[in-house]
Length: 103
Ligand code: FES
Image (cartoon, rainbow, N blue to C red; front, side, top):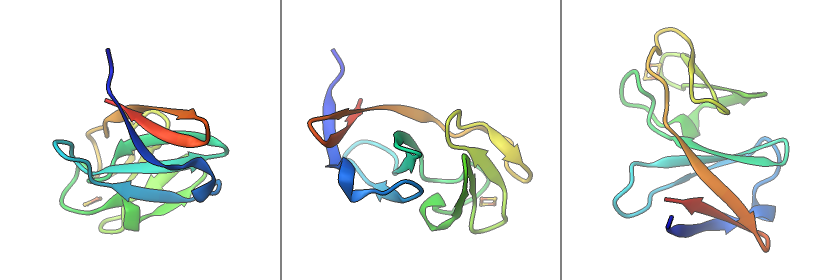
């Protein structure tokens, strides 16, 4: 059975906002409020060393702050160079107003 870890109150992240989380034993993850749906993806860019939490979100695309490559936040797929490798995506669930990571 999947373990679930509370990340934050759903109301604390408005649509278009994002927050980085570092959980024990996991790579840094980025939680994004995508028009009311929560997405959880790797926070580390797959191109080099950069935190996507410092990047720019435009719709469903997040742009890396370092070289401007981009990813789709719903699929993790790389959308523009120099990014080629997809980000991992993770399962989240909202229960009683709290967002959980299902690890
Ligand atoms: Fe992200 Fe280069 S580190 S595009």
